[in-house]
Length: 350
Image (cartoon, rainbow, N blue to C red; front, top):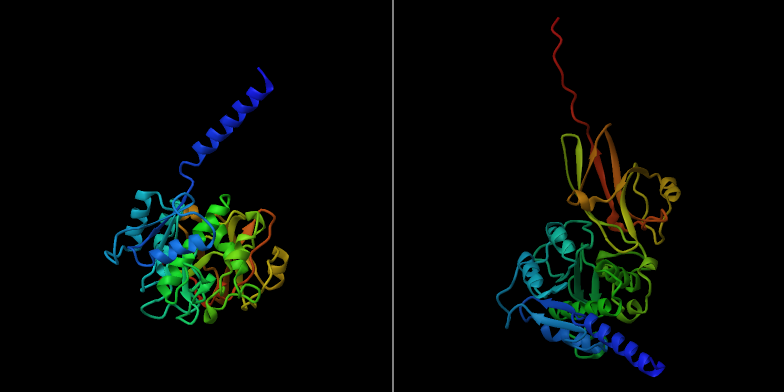
């Protein structure tokens, strides 16, 4: 067969293969109703991507109703093949992350939600793992917020001046990051945004929009997911009952993570800005309690109290090399007064 004909056949095969692989290449973003739809679509254009062929942004309904609850929006997103959801509505509640974590992660989804809670959120609430909480800079901030977006960010079609517009714009930009980094999962996208936001170098601060102002371009410039910083799980102390301490552990499932680990401290260690080794955590007074993958146990973990004491607990993310995530202010849970169950047995009658 002549070389020229063989070359043409190979090139045709490659073109057909690429075309077949690209049938469903768009990252699909589902907007809750049409609220913020224009900002999400505008953000895609501002990032230099093509609507529909690269990022497909669709509303769950025309107009601003009916609003879908997180559970309903997940089902709606599944129906159309969306992997990123966005709700530009008030009413954020911290427990959403635990309540819908498994359903979102099992479907490979992330949900961007406006940080406009109807009441103050629990003290020291962590930023969510499976959700993304965001508000415009100048709007409400507080416990559990993850990012801030300046009014007029990028000065293009996606810019806005309200919490709703900032939420939809961030969702659009996250969809663009996912398209341009197909090997990243949604936790990697979040890690890239956290690592390049304005507060990362000094640490999470709920008073200034959590990890701070996003920097889309710096996040997009990052490369291999295995080099992104580690972030701890979003953990909430649930209760202390009958000598058992219960935790809700929403693992931060970035590509670099292999396990979560619980350490106990007698005194609260200071938050830090660097990742830690086991020896460094031990030097801070940490005692390793358990390490493993708690996604297999419904994202709950238990600690059985042995002796009466006052303690602090910190959950870390761990990578394959034995490096642990840094201590964020929201990571420190406590003080907790631990009381073991009362020993009971037959009475001795004299």
